[in-house]
Image 1 (cartoon, rainbow, N blue to C red):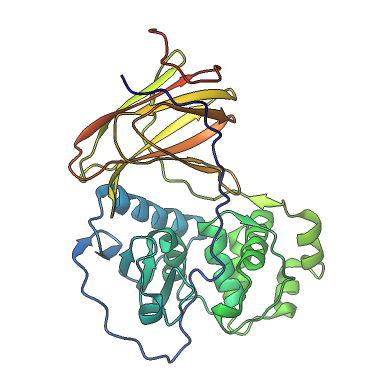
Image 2 (image 1 turned 60 degrees about the vertical axis):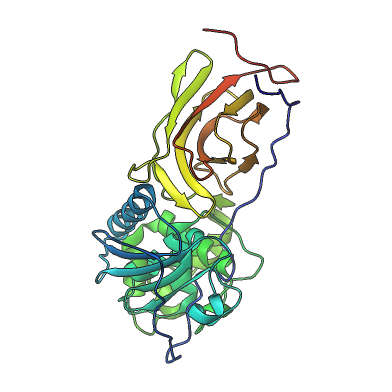
Length: 345
């Protein structure tokens, strides 16, 4: 029997796109030859080069995101994408991106360098590489709008901008997301088809009061446009459970430096206090989907932990230490101040 922990308050961390994430090198900058990373994979859209083993779940997630972004925008990636990907905090961003404050960059010609959290942002750049408008405010704003949740920034709308490092990412992303929400992607692509587009072109397409409309009408936050699906937990009354198989060939498994990760989806229909337990010795991560910003918690595994959960859909990632082949996840409704084992159904 594992020790029972007192009720834990779940720390909710605000997640948002890094302000420098996705900043590209200036045109004409010399670029080093790509690195030789230990692992390489080929898929429909990618040649993936990685510092650690990536799994079928990683490749399926990135492939599905490309399909979503292409379908949403009605734009196809101009060619195969060379994705060089590192675990978080493992990218030498000075060498590969020419900037020590970024998590990833798109270098043109389908070439991406980035840490795992930046991949979707950079993929938007690769898909839309041939759009005529190169104003970085709208280029980076589009990547933020498609790949991230967005919220009002602290800086007024400022464009055109020549360099990504000079873009206020929150402001750009939220403005583009509002344009997409209010008028659809077709009009935005009309604007991006103008090589030297400026405010006059924007007002011709969207109306002279477009910026006032943004501040008056835009939601305070927008959730992510895309969430990659994961298998649901099995439910029996007030108990949810799942067997966990840590096999890199499975679509529900992703790879990290600290071990393989199994991903599950948990739907909470009624808010309340819930207890969680997993037999796996690694970290348990919980992220609320379809929210802006998404709530995220990190919980120790191997013991019962408990806390309040709002109604919603959650993505649960269970990290297994190397050598772990299988495990169990169990969640149950628990209103006690100290989490206890559930009664048998």
